[in-house]
Length: 65
Image 1 (cartoon, rainbow, N blue to C red):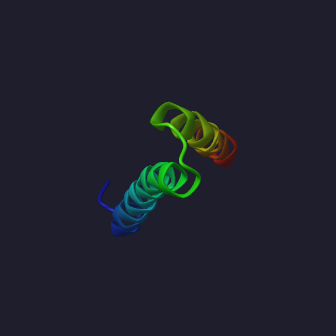
Image 2: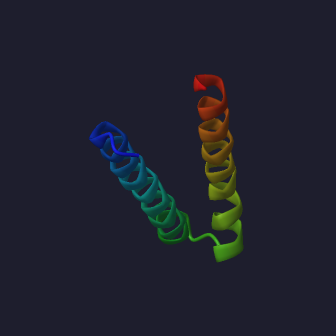
Image 3: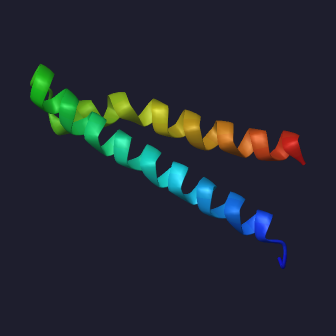
């Protein structure tokens, strides 16, 4: 916890994950406005990307350790 490299990696990881959540939120709005989809349909199209991201992050951390 005293190593500053750990904190740098933590901040980078937090920023990247926050940016991905923002992109998914914008993707939902984009699908609604561009293709005139209902909100539920657009959310269901974005959901696999969100779940894949969460699964892939967990798998990478597991394999990295």
